[in-house]
Length: 120
Image 1 (cartoon, helix red, strand yellow):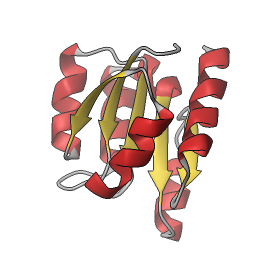
Image 2 (tube, rainbow, N blue to C red; image 1 turned 180 degrees about the vertical axis):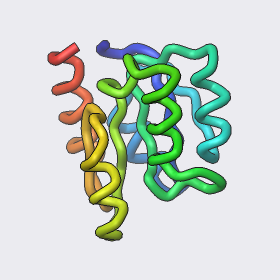
Image 3 (spheres, rainbow, N blue to C red; image 1 turned 30 degrees about the horizontal axis):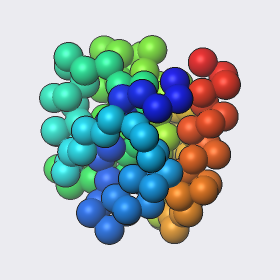
């Protein structure tokens, strides 16, 4: 999976850490959950990074879509979660590849992606 294609749907302020963590990757950025789902109809990213608090659809909505239509991509998905306990409970109820609490560092995201790379 190293240095492949990535789908990134995160808030603009989180993009610098993601870009640093996935240096060398070909990244497709989406501003909201609907864009991410549209991309996933045809795209096959090697990694998916989702901010839980996406506009128009949460990361949980995107994950539910993946579970129904593209379940093989769940193991390649990393979700960034804020302090909302209900968000933590929702994300821990689904089988995604990784979870990171916000705020996060580029090094933490890079390490999470590295672990997913060795489990795929």
